[in-house]
Length: 77
Image 1 (cartoon, rainbow, N blue to C red):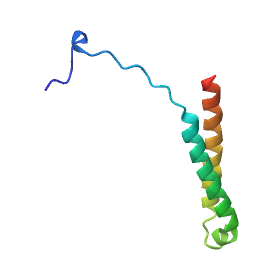
Image 2 (tube, helix red, strand yellow):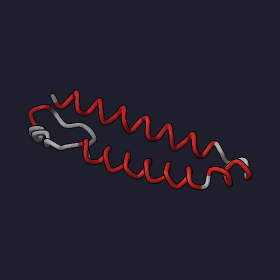
Image 3 (cartoon, rainbow, N blue to C red):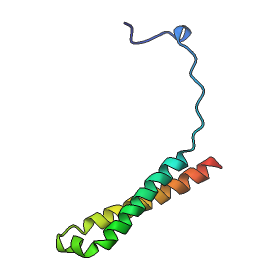
């Protein structure tokens, strides 16, 4: 088995596949939003158990999802 091939022996690179990554980011964003709603419903319990940082984790997930969605929308144009 050889690790390297000469350029003349290589097959041509396949053409890139067009995908809509916004769907995947949107699905993740929806899941973060569901988690945010659930954690807001039990926020008092989170404070009592010193787990309020979970809420901030979800807020950051939502924010990064929005940034990703904006980035992909701008890049698509």
